[in-house]
Length: 336
Image (cartoon, rainbow, N blue to C red; front, side, top):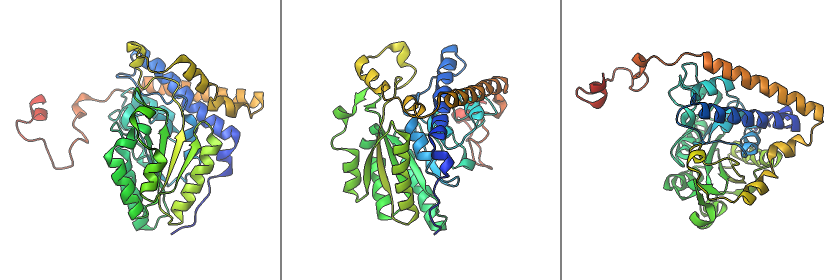
């Protein structure tokens, strides 16, 4: 098995961490605007507020490492290096998207970058990550796989089954629980008995609670977990305590559901990872990085808007394996 390779130092400087988080924040703000204008259909689950987790984790990974994401996955995808132009095109259902406009917000993937896909099913990325980690171990590649999931997934059986297998087989996987305090609108204290760390301990998996609003702290914890996985030490679980500043989904802006107090939101906003990390930079450098990111987002919008929509005649492409066709009389056949 290959020796652990630390993340490049340049990827963990305050400037690099700030730029990566700024890209995610501006991308999500632009996506929200496109939802409001109707250019992104169906809405999104914004990642605003949680940027430190994605950036801190992915800064500790090698290019060959892999990850599985969640319904709130834009931050993970961008932090792992996906092209923001192609991700935005995917959200807008364009042919130039990461998945030709077929995956949309909740299923974006880029296998070439090790992004095995976001997932709209709570906790469903965990077994995919375990399978990829098992393959990596069999191949002796030294590759590590990260599985992101939220606090709501702590009650999903598939996650517990995956923790069990990962521990038994000493898989090189890092489980990252983004505990933002709510599963949709259900407060974690009302829906989760015990804790994320307690669940890991039940399977003999080392666990660590991390300040998920501090990218440097997240990176340090992830680096330890990744090094352990590469050294055949098995899985680790990280519980990153974080917060989403926006609603669970953009639909909340329309139905105006109330389950969080303004005081709670403001208290967490005072710990904004962008502001905390940006304060470490000279003002001129921060302004320079902001302008750089703004240009990237403008390019992404122009690229996505100018990209073609998929051809309806190609709707069944990639749906069936080569050589297979829908049965005669099936719903798909009738639609033809």
